[in-house]
Image 1 (cartoon, rainbow, N blue to C red):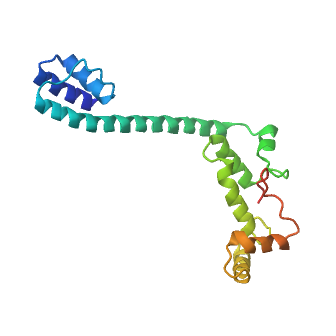
Image 2 (tube, rainbow, N blue to C red):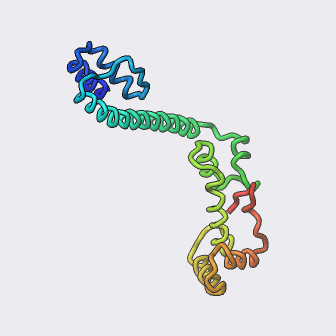
Length: 187
């Protein structure tokens, strides 16, 4: 607004336009509409107008981007508050329960973040799978024993990554490697 007003008033003064015509010219330039109904005749003002347009269009773009970001943050905060205030019911629990054994902390947090639109399941699934690979004893926690087992598996696999032969060896030791398929996030 300040940019449009100041540029418009400078053009109005130097070109002999009314203040409204100068501000209109600045507005048309900054929004890149370019009707052509007003244009500076003074060569120095034309050069100044080029610089004004280059800087002004960048400022308008930045301002619109910041406005859009503020609107998105406000909407996300409203949605977050609504989810936090929502009464937990059976349907919500059933929707969050990925493995049929009740909702654990991971499923709850993941489900809420997904409902907020902060993350998508495709972003989380590889990390859940990775956790499952690293959890050598299947306890649902990574502890010192898991890390030591990972190191032994790495040495046995002769440098293969954890997702390769080492992960396969751990999965083969377990009674079942289920729980990390496409529709299941249990860890």
